[in-house]
Length: 433
Image (spheres, rainbow, N blue to C red):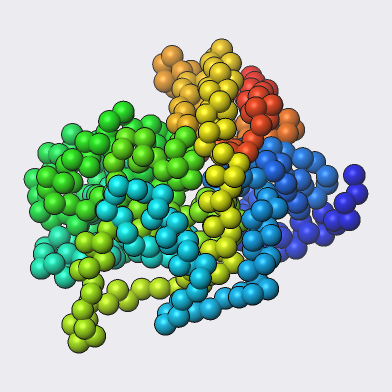
C-alpha cells in the first residue's frame, strides 16, 4: 500500500539526526525504524500501511483511543480562541474548570488544590520540592529525606530520579540525588529507626510499572496510609501510570479507599493527546505557603507551558468521555475478558508469571520457570518477542523479559483476544529457537 510516505528517506534522516529515548542508537541505526504515521481508536498505522493494535497505549498514555473526535474538537476550538498564555500572573477558564473537576474526582478527601506542570517527572518533582518546603515552613527542617521502594520508577528529572529503585536508569547520577531511604516492603519501612527525618513516602499504588508490572499485596496501601498518619509523614501517590481507569477505578488509591496528601497525575490526563501534568495537594499543605512577600513562603517553581489551554481543553474532554461513554462501567467486562485470554498463555512453558491489575498486564517469560532460570539479558528476549508480535498486528514494548499489555480503554474484546494471540505466537516463535 502506497500512502505517499517515503519510508527510506524518512529512515535515513531519522538515523542521521535523531536520538531516541531509552534506545541504543547503534542497534537502532542498523535496521529500518517503525514509522507511525496515523492512528485511530486502538489502532496505529505505519508508513508502509501496516496496522497494529496499540498494546501499550503509546507508552501508557492513551485512554479513549487515538484521534477521538470529542478531544480533537475540544483542542481545535480552544486553539482558535486561546492557544497559550503564561500561568505566571494570569489564569484562564479551562485551567480553572479543570482544577475544579480534578478535585471533584476525589470526594470526601482533603485534596483541594491543583498545581499544573508538563509531564509525570515534573509532577513528581513538584511534589518533592513542595514536601521539603512544607516542612521548612512548618518549623521541621530536619525532615529532609524521602522514602521510596525497591523497583520504583518516578521519572527522569534529577529529583524524581532520586527516588528510582532501578539501578540501570539512575545509578550513574546518584551523586546528584536527594537523600532517599529505599525499602523493599512495608515491614522494612515500619522498622526504619528515624521516621522523624522523613519528609514523605512515595509509591506507585497497587502496581509498579517499570519494575515489570509488579503487584503490591492487597491492603498494603491502607497500611502505608496508616503508617504515615501515625508518624506524621506526607504520603505521595504517583498515579502517572495508574490514573484514569487503568486499574478499574478512576484512581488506583480508590480501590483501597484511601487518599494521599499529594497526588501526581500525567499521561492519561489529556487522554494521551497532549502533554499535561498535575500535582494535587491538601489544603493544609497549601496553607503553609501563604504569607507576605517578605516572609518568602512562595513556591518558586513553574514551567513555560504550565496549564497550557489546549492541553487543559483536552483534559476536560477526556473527563467528559468517562461519563458520556461510561468508560469505567464498560471497562469491567473487558478486564474479565483480558483475564480469561491471559490464562491461555499459561500453557506456554516459557511463561513464568502473569501479573494483572485491572486493564494492566505483565507476562514474564523465562528460559525455565520451574527453576526460575531467566534468559540471558544479552539475548533481549522480551524485545525480540515484542518485535515478532508486530507481524501479528500488535505493537508493544517489554520491560526486560516482561511483556506489557496495557491497551487503551476503548479496546474491543476482539482486539484484546487478538493482542493475546499475537503475544502467544510471538513467544513461541522466539523462545522455541
